Image 1: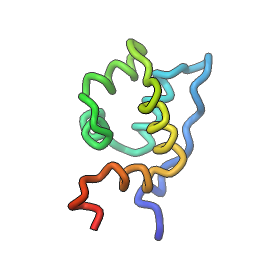
Image 2: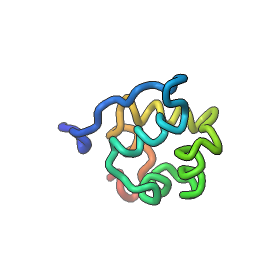
Image 3: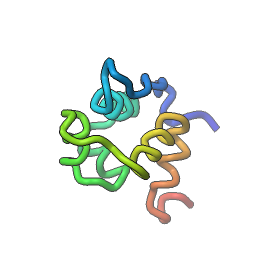
Length: 88
């Protein structure tokens, strides 16, 4: 099966140059989703995504792992997050 996100290039890992804000923004941008679309797909309020991207908050724990999963295998991650009715 081919990727639904062929444009998805691995963003730079978080680090001192861009930090978590740039990393979170890069994950969403490479998936070509708005903040609202991305928030809905991963099950968080849009305000959470905004806060990550503005550097007000940082994704932690399971959410950080989810972002890594989306970075490494976006089709698999988004398929796993899809409602059961959409997986059939």
